[in-house]
Length: 214
Length: 390
Image (tube, rainbow over all chains, first blue to last red; front, top):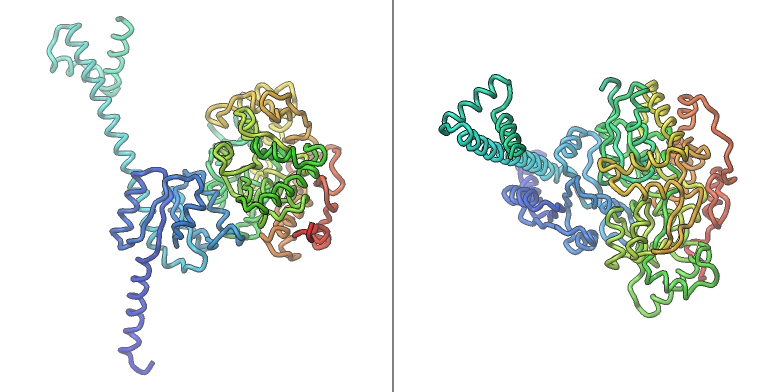
């Protein structure tokens, strides 16, 4: 207490110790989606958590979890097996270490963010909640990143299929009207503008009409 | 669509019928409500989304509404149940192998739960003698009627459910598969999963839930505790829409339409005959067998089933105490009872509950002491569990 130098050093030392033990936390991810699980596991490893496992199969989920004996369990909300984990809250012979859901009643925003992202976290009872806050934050951002990735993929997929339809429509027009490719595309675009539609929509009508007239 | 917007979560089970009919038949819209029903995959999700306000109301396991209000096993969020979405509706199914063993061990009619429970106790003891793995039974959630039905039944035969067998939580869609690959030897679940196991020849229905308890509080409409005061008027309209729905469901002339709406792909996504059979209380016990009929197999609104009964809340709390999920205290009992709100039901519907032939203690268990909410310690003391050397 007398030396300021000492009181300043102490928190730093505690922090370091905490940081070291935290990266040793054993984390298990329960997610049937391999891509999302990989994204999350990578994120955790990058953040220094080296002890990250994954459970893909949800049959005998409790036995699998006990075999890994994790400190933290992360599970996606689309997984019906979330209810299986409810059994781990119970203090009974079937349960080796009681588990609590990561919830902080004072921090509803964090819970909302997690539910929104589609993930929930469970911790071994007694583990300080602050210690896993950063893990949950990381989960939320990775889950959101995955959702964005899915959206982008969907957009790309749509764009690709639009491209294909437009190509087919162009081909049909070129053949029917005996015109060049550029002219066929210009015709599609003009019609789209006149009718206030997307080029892909007009192209789809052309393809549908051509199929009907076959 | 116009009207006050409400998001209501549900699990695709037959006792979500009142919500589905209220919305899909336009009864909610007629009350000026624009209800979005959200299908969920787990009770944990339903509870959490209700807790943080993503859902305005939810189809919830009756015991889970109480556990949440008491803060047992999870964060404490006070919920209120102003409407019962269903009483009864479960069944206990066992593998064909276990059924055969039980038949050999039974002294009497296996359809009598006292006989079957004692037979099960003999099987359990015999397995222990030869060092076999304990039998495993699936149920849907620690705070569920399924859990309490299995435990009550087993204990009646002298089995301690936490020591002599393994009770495991399984999501209902995984029940049948788990019975098929012998992860469990039996389960207690709601419709349509017992029938699915029977139709596949994997399992045999041993008892209807109504064989264990004549009148079991199964699912509630749960809302936040603040709702009845903050948005009293909207809640009343929702309750009226649900009341119209349960009347519609209770009228057998509508059964085909009800079955079709509830079974629809965006709702339960099962064959309509399955819903129909459940609502009629006609279930085949074994593949190829004649259906057994029980008029109280599931009660949706019929016989005053929609009106919450605080005795049911007290009884559910007593089950939690019996199985070490909660300590016994007058405060917790009062909180549990406050969860079920017949007054809200009465205010909204201005209709006295119809006369009904309910059991004297509200529950009607097949064996054991009559339930007494004023003397839970005495009631629990009357069960000899763990049994004294049976």
